[in-house]
Image (cartoon, rainbow, N blue to C red; front, side, top):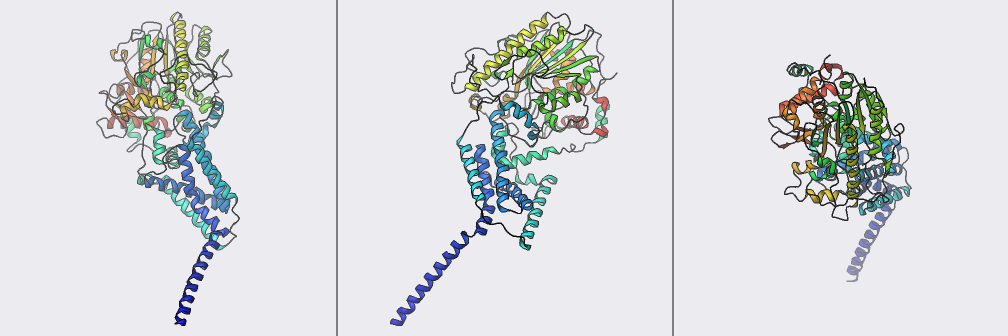
Amino acid sequence: MKNNQDTKQLIVLDVKRKIINFFKKIITLITNKKFIAIFLFAISPIFSYIMLETIQGGKILLNIKYIVLNLLFIYSLLLLLYFLTSSYKKSIIISNIILYVLSLANYVVTSFRGTPIVPWDILCIGVALNVSSSFKSIPITSGLIIGTSIFTLLIVFAIRLKYESKKSLKKLIFKFTSAVIVSFFIICFYSTNLITAFNLDENLWEPAKEYHNNGFIASLFKNSKSLFVSAPESYSFRNVKEIYNNMPIQSEISSDEKPNIVVIIDESFADLNVLGNLDLSEDYLPFLHSLSNSNRVIKGNLHVSVYGGQTPNTEWEFLTGNTMAFMPPRTVPFQQYIYSPTQSLVSTLEAQGYKTSAFHPYYKTGYRRNYIYNFLGFDSFLDINDLKDLNYLRAFADDRSTFQNIINLFENKSSDDKLFSYTLTMQNHSGYDFPDYTAKITQSNPLYSLTDQYLSVAHESDTALKELLEYFENYKEPTIVLFFGDHQPNTNSEFFDDILNSNENPDSKEIQEKKYITPFVIWANYDLNIKDEELKNIDDISLNYLSGVLLKIANLKTTPYMDYLENLRKTIPVITGNGYISKDKKYYNIDDDTSYKDILKDYSFLQYNNVFDKSNKINEIFEIKE
């Protein structure tokens, strides 16, 4: 009996010993410097992912495929850094610093611009630094605080790592394997349709929502594919030549005197009444609303491709007749694609004897305008350092003093010269949180003070426009003024949501497109002899058509490309980076299979030939005939 008890006690003791030894091994393992380093290295991308999405205010629990894709990019960055540094500690620290800086940059840009960052925004770093002084505060959210805390903890834990593997065959194999895995993934991503396997959400109408739905890092890399532009399917020089040969013969213009042309793209100028009913203390655009179509005035809705920022895309579409519809989403042609002289409205007017000048009351280096305006054909370009007697409203040169520089230009011109004056203003630029500026016009919700400030400064633009047109009303030479806004402002997003959500289907393309509409006015100090009745009553138009319409109204020569677009406009009056609207007011995505597919393909062929196919470009399509 005693032997049995002793045996049982021995068995119990043995079990206890094994359990104790097991936990000792576990404790030894998890306190082992090597294990801690490898474990943190392995799990840090998961916390990096949580950090990224938390800072953006995005979703963490995405579609599982989206989570996997985001983690693949983060792990690839980590492995690449390990290959370069041979250090767990350095790889974790550097990768998280890179990701945190990117995430913070996106948070700030989205807060002020309303749209997330894209890879080529790095080229705009000078613009960002210049404008940053105008932003009085960065909104501090719980997501920003939590994300920053996660980042801080990752860095602290990584710094405390004591283990670094020594040179060995295993380490060499791991480094080599890491390089192979990363290279294979990146090559597949950029050279194949791997991205389609993840079925990422494409919400071109709401870029910020797309980033939230897909994950920040996956969206950023997806946009990086846009740096490489391939020809449209079935594109060929022969096809472009055939389209050109079938273009209608250009009509002759009359011998009427050529008018001076003044174009003003007013920063963030928009009539927010297009969103819905506004409850305001007073009309903030009384002069604009007093204008109506007549023998001297044409006004309507201008559909643009951008919201809250990326003004150069508005400029590019207007000046060239090209459209963002056929460009990779959220690219910036000024930054990425223009590196040589390019046919434009400017060169078309110069060919007809016009002297051309550009004004911008900010720094000319922004978005490479110091190069781009030269490539487009401007004779001169004056910026904040060149324009005279500028006055400031908040942090920016006001429209009134900017317009006075236009007046000075015309006061000092020779009577023999015909001028094309092009001005891009700055007065209404975001942000709208200047504490020393008192809003004169308010809407009903006191929470939306940013919107009140915007409404008040836009009112000043309306007054400045009135004064400018009063000057040209008495100007001795025939002059046409085209005035329009580049995009709507990014003020209180809730203000826009409140108005749009009052609609039955607020997420529909019809409703979301309302955020991409600004007003345009073509005004003349003489009676316009417009033979085409349709030109007198333009309700909706997109930027790619506007320069051609301007020249036709001015009774000036147009290029075959402009004539082609004018014919296309009567079928598809609106084409933007967000889709298109047919003449029967139906809204489509650019890739929808519709009866318009073939004519849109022709347009894409012409644009590709114009922008990218330099060796086979048919210049006579884009130039006026002598």
